Every structure is written in structure tokens, then in C-alpha cells.
Length: 276
Image (tube, rainbow, N blue to C red; front, side):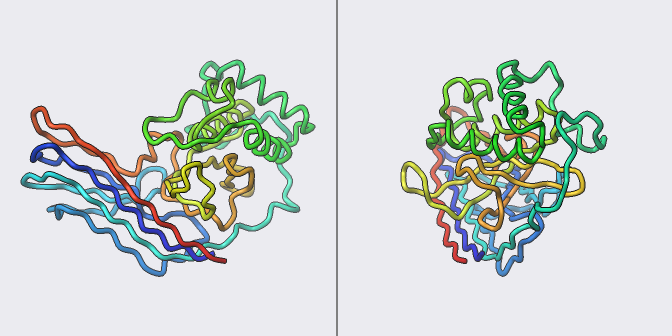
């Protein structure tokens, strides 16, 4: 699929401020993508600019500034092509629950005590209904969250607790993603949070936004994505920017400013053109 994405983020300050170091996560990542063109424009112009890869394999941009400014504007544009991952047909996975895991994947699991009992019970009920098949469970979990959740846009704030999303049956894409992750981890499946864009424009406000979905690590297959907001498996209709154990590690922009009594406002515009 061909993706053309333009994402503008702008902070305005009530008085001139000194900008601290900033970290940007606007670079497309992952296998199966071919970047045709890429542009990242920042104003005011940084005095320091480094492209690095973080410990989770994400390409990130580190910026440093001098002087003062009344705004920070970031224009990210890219044109790329995506390819669908290989089909899962013919691949077998161990029955659930999983216990023995690669040590490198433990960061994508929760301690037993950290998982809410209601989420554990929810996950085990779905697994039992799936005959304890890992792939059957993941498909059922994806469809169940899609069918039972009232999806809405929430512009600010981190994801709510998975138990809250489960109890209320309502949440934004990041909330549903974190509930999926918690349910998968309750059965020993490594899972991570992904932030990026998706081709479908089905949002409550008719606009385009960053999207969030979970990925799970399957033995012999690697990371595979699911999108409970839309009830489908992730193929070529998604572009990932960042993946991490939780949402905090995927924020598109991190940084701060100095200014006594200064307030800031944020606005953004996302435009996506996608075609087969």
C-alpha cells in the first residue's frame, strides 16, 4: 500500500521561552516498508540534531536549541510503500499459557501481581473458549475488544488502566491496545504498544490522528500486530513509528521549556493519503 503522510505539531507559548532538549519519534520503522521520500522540518532551527536508535529499535531524533522562541513547530512528511507480512497459515504455536521465554522478551511481560484479577479472568475465559490455542485466543481477543468497546477519540492523557477499559467497555485506541496487551501478558504472551498511522479514516470526529495498536511476539514468527479498534490483523494498512513495552515509551515528542508563568497550547494536523 502507498502512504503519503503529513503530520504537523505546533506548540505556542504565551511568552518567549528557552526550549530544552527534545526527542522526536516521527520516523517510520519496521520491516516491509520502502521509504520513497522523507522530510522533517523543525522551527526554530535546532543547533543540535542527531538521528539515533533507542534500545527498543526505534529511530528517534534528538534536538537541542539555543535562544528563545514563542513556538515550536514540527512538520513531518513521508511517502512510502508497505508490504503485508507473511501469512500465519501453516505456523504452529504452543498452547497457552506460556511460561518459558527468551530473557530478552521479559521486558514485554508483567509481573503476576501487576495484572488486575478481572483482566486475568477475562483472558483465561477467552483462552478456554479458544481451546487454549494461542492464535485462536489472539483472534478472539481482537474481535471481542472490537465488538464490546465503544471507541472514541480522547485527545489528551495517557491510556487508562486496562481494568477500567474492561469494566466500562469504552476507550480510545490507546486504551484498547493496553487492555489487549494486559490480557496477552496474563497468559505469558510478550506484547508491546505501537504508535503510528493507519489507512482507514473511520474516526468519530472525521479527522485523522495518530493511531495505537498492540503487537505480540510469537515463537518462530516474531512480532505480529493486531488492531482491536478495527477488529483486524495488522497487514499493510498500518505504518509504525515507535514500539515499546508501554505507551510512555512511544510518545511522538518529549521535551520541555523554561519560562516563568508561561503557558503552552498544542495543535496538530494529520493528513493521510493511502491507496492500494
